[in-house]
Length: 435
Image 1 (cartoon, rainbow, N blue to C red):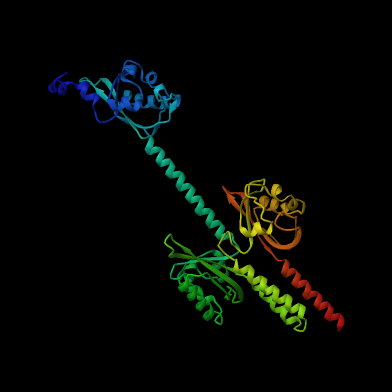
Image 2: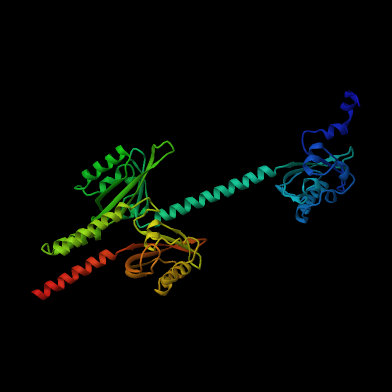
């Protein structure tokens, strides 16, 4: 066994035990020696590579070998160190480790070792395996891209919903409104945050709304109220608002999420029905029923997306494949699970009724499409019989890379309102004939 003094003077022993991964090459690329850490990282015993050309000793993809050789050539020509950008250089796994190829990433620097006369004697390669760090960085980048996409998608849905969406702090201070609110009121977002929104409520509705809101904050129960909001032109319109608390793991309220739905036309319709003929018991009953149904529809107004008080569906691609539907949509269509299926596969009757024609035009033009009081014939399902309903609906395109990638549909069942209006029209005709 060599004495410690002999080992201290043994430069080969010293080289083998360097605390990093080093490969010593002749100027022509022949392997002369490597450190123990290089031997471990390169997956090849030292005895099988010494005396062979580096690319024969460590075969890899031609592009990887060409990139590595270019760095060595720069050292040969400039006699200066050359640090490479991140290099992918895969290596063959030994049969004992299962064989095959292992994907590896390296940080490589080549150093010239010069003789007294300045000629190149050796090329010293320092190759650090950074595969784990590279994969971790790639995974982090993928995660960030997915997070950015989720945020973009959520923002798009918030701005596309035909609702005034808002959030507050646990104490009830407003900290977000979507553009539906600010476009309606004409105020800036900064002027609306905090308690600024209250300046646009009708003075007669503000005390009652404030009391209901404070009660919800105190109890943590969902908030619901109806009030008039001043439009940018000074006109007031009726809205129904609902908000629910978002709770943390310990049950404490972390934020409130709310939305306002425009119920102005429903309010006017109910009022007109009630005033048309108070002596008509049937009409009064129908008006009361209509008002009750409107109230019930608003009671399930919101859990912003899934519990929105209108049917929401998102289709993507030229085949109109469903990517998202909310509970109201499933209920309207008979609880059919459609996500992942095309419109034609899920509801062939919609194709026959012409609902894809305006959708195709939205894809072609990039412009939204709306229609009111359109007849929709629904087939029988396991959950409900065949029936006819009337809907108001909108197709809103969304874009990716400047092109229409899909569309969001917002539809609202207005069957009761159509029925009520026709009843009112018939009452008017009856009154005219009587006179």
